[in-house]
Length: 270
Image (tube, rainbow, N blue to C red):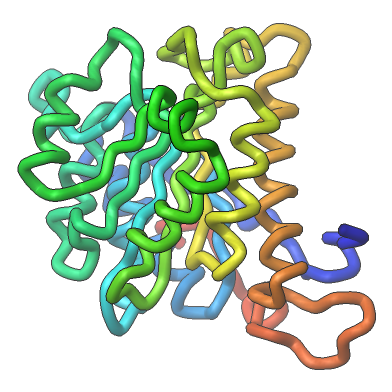
């Protein structure tokens, strides 16, 4: 669409969040503080995992800065709605806990690409109990990806003030994204995902996380390259829609990006 991210956005790597080895809850607190630090300064966060447990503290860090409800659009092959995994709030559990946050109700959670044979059945039961929306690959095949994406957009935004986008790379078939911890055959094609992302982000989002990219398992860096493409396409769509940064032919910022905080931003725990 002719968008040059280097011209349209001021981007900065604010570094890694300081984690506490073997202490998940304290690490969550660190992630929460880091995300809150960015939102307090009107900086749009692109958060890279790591495993998907970070979905919970990412939403928790955002929630105090939203005067209203938060919708969540979640691309994944797994529902991640278990309460615990090995008695911990780790991967497989983030959206059980994120939707316990008062202004992140489960009715505004839309999960896209769920399916396969590992770890989804219990989560789907929780989704039904909580009235969250689960969209399987079969649903996408039946109804068409554009119709599904429009539906996801409508559900996530209903009575919500903003939407958070959570993208697990394993929603893509492992033939195209082998570098991940829990690959599940029968996933989405890259071009299907990229098309849906353009639709679900056009109204704007409050932040993006891309998780479960595992370079040690990758082949020829193709999974990492897909993760980068997801980020670039989302940012490009936001710029094109006037939701972030500036277009080259514009003179007025749509919303503040990094410039106000670039000089004083610091990693969590600082």
